[in-house]
Length: 251
Length: 286
Ligand SMILES: Nc1ncnc2c1ncn2[C@@H]1O[C@H](COP(=O)(O)OP(=O)(O)OP(=O)(O)O)[C@@H](O)[C@H]1O
Ligand SMILES: [Mg+2]
Image 1 (cartoon, rainbow over the protein chains, first blue to last red):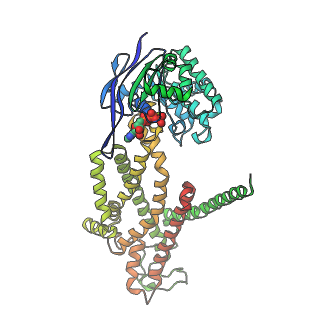
Image 2 (cartoon, rainbow over the protein chains, first blue to last red; image 1 turned 90 degrees about the vertical axis):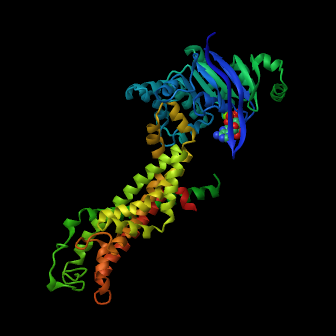
Image 3 (cartoon, rainbow over the protein chains, first blue to last red; image 1 turned 180 degrees about the vertical axis):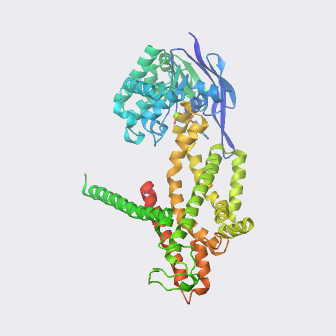
C-alpha cells in the first residue's frame, strides 16, 4: 500500500511560564491510502497537538510531516491553502469550530468559495454534503447555537468533506455523542472511506471504537508513542505496561 | 415547568420588550437630533449669521424664542446651526477613532510580537496623559479650527479602542472557528474581515455610541477655550464662551447652547446605554 501521510520524529515543547513541557515527544507513524489509523491515549497525552501540527495550526520544534512523499511543514501562503484541499480536520469541539455569527451553510461553503466555486454551485454541493451526513437541508440556515452537538458534529464533517480531501483527521469526532448517534457517524465515516478512498486519522480514547474501525493503532502515553500495531493484537496481547492498564480499564 | 421558572421566563420577556421600547425612544430621539443637525440650514427661522445691532441682547420671546446675542443674531437659529458643527465633528471624531483604534488593535492582537509591544507602549503613553490637557496642547500646536480640534482629540482617544479590539482579537484568534476558517483556505485578510471584525463589532459599537456624548463635550470644551471653531462659526462651545461675560445680565446667551449640549449629551448617552442592553445583555446584570 502507498503511504499518504508520514510523520517523522516530531517533537513539540510548550512553555508554561518559561517551564518547558514536552507535549509530543518523537512520534513517528504513517497513514496509508484508504486506511483508518487510530491514535489513542489518555486525556492530555498530546493527541490534539499532533492533529494541529499536521494541519499547520502549531509548528513543531523538530521533525517532518510528509504528504504523498513531500514535506509540508514549510508550505506557506498559496501552497499552504492548497494543502487544506488534501487534509481536513473535524475539530474536537464542533460547536466552537463554527463562527457564531455565520450559518452552518456559510461555514460549509467557505472552502468551496475560496477555491473559486460559483455561489450557486457551492450551494448545490453544500446541500449534497448535508444529505450525505444525513442532515435536513434546513440546517444550512441555522446558527451553531441553534443545533445540537451531534448535528453540529455532522455539519463539521460535511465541512471537512467539502474540498474532497485525501486525509480526514477526526479529533474525538464522536466523544460528545450518545451511542446511537455515534454509531451513525461511525457508519458514515466507514462508508465514505469505502466509497471515496478517504484515509482517516481517528483520534479517540475509546478502544472499542478503535477496534471496530481502525486498521492500525498507535497508543500514546505522556507525549510518546508506546505501542503500534493492529488493534486486535494490541488489545489481546498488549506488550507495554501502559497499554495493559488502558486495555484492562476498558475490557 | 415549575412556578419559579415560569416567573423568571416571564420576567425576561418583560425586560426584553422594555429594552425594545427604550431603544426606540432614545434611538428615535438621537436620530431626531441628527436630523436637526443634518437639515439645520433649512430649519433656522433667521439667518444665524445676520447681525442687527438694533436687536442686540433681546431676551427670549417676541419673535426670538431664545433671544438674541450681542450682535443681534437669533439664538435659536445659532443653536440649530451650531448643532451641525458640534454633532457632526463629534461623529467624525468617533468614526475616526473607531476605525484607527480598531485597526491598530486588531493588528496588534492578531500579529503579536514586537510591533504589538511597541504600539501598545505608544498607546500607554497617550493613556498616561490627562486627556484634555494633551488635547489642548495638540490643538494649540495645530492652531484653531474644528478639524484641528478633531485631530487633537483623535490623537488622545484612539488608544481606548485599540485596547478593546486588541484584547478581543487576542481572545478570538485562538478559538477553533478561526482555525477552521484557516483550514477552509481563507487567507489572513479574509479571516480578519469575515470572522474577527463581525465578532468584535458589538462591544466596539457600544463604546462608540456611548462616546458620542463625551466627544460632543470635549469638542465644545476645546471651542470654549478658543481652540476649536473660529468665532463667526456657530458652535455651541464657542457660543458659550462668547456669552461668558454676560452670564448675569443676559443669561440666555450662555444658557441656550449650554442646555443644547446638556440635552444632546444625555440623549446620546441614554441611546448608547440602550444599545448596549440590546447588543450585550450580559453586561447589564453587573
Ligand atoms: N497552547 C498550549 N500551550 C501550553 N500547553 C499546551 C497547549 N496546548 C496543549 N498544551 C498541553 O499539551 C498537552 C497535550 O494537549 P492535547 O490537547 O494535545 O491533549 P489531548 O491528547 O488532545 O487530550 P484530550 O484527550 O483531553 O483532548 C496537555 O497537557 C496540554 O495542557
Ligand atoms: Mg484533544
